[in-house]
Length: 235
Image: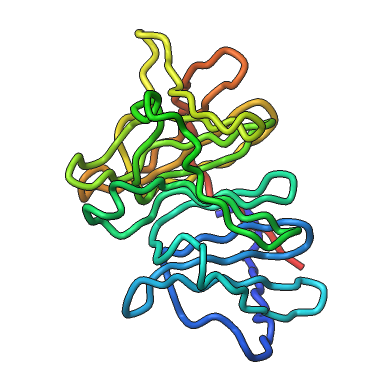
């Protein structure tokens, strides 16, 4: 096989106390030189909120005991203009189903706001709580795809949230244009004018397909890839 032996050297950053406990199913995002971490699961669901100073290599636990979202798992978190947007991940119950799954955190004022300013007549035009979805930012909007929606199972819903107007819109696609379909536990990123979505779970079956959503013409494309092993030396 051609190429050099792969070398990938991870370096553990020695963390000073205090620091977050072991966890999974949490969410992280970077904003203005800080890494923000919220919730997840250890032995139980967590609701702690942390900020990591990259330059100083220090964790700081932020206060969310009052108006924060509560315990969350498999939620999403994105950042836009100094505000963090957390969606979904609430523990399933009749109580949480009646609450909005969207929360906003202003990093300047350190204040939480619950995104419940949707008019009653438009509640059906906003996504319900879900887990394992993906969330990305493109221009002035957040795009959410799929996820696990309680007893309804996995979803293929595609929503956009406009940050400036704080309104939701269901993203429709041409009838002939098939997309990734229902799934959860997948990942998505934005590059140039497209969102790339990979993998996830359909039932108990892991997926390895790659999809491209073109923001310009509002269409999905299934990307057929060739697999090869790339050997590089990392420094």
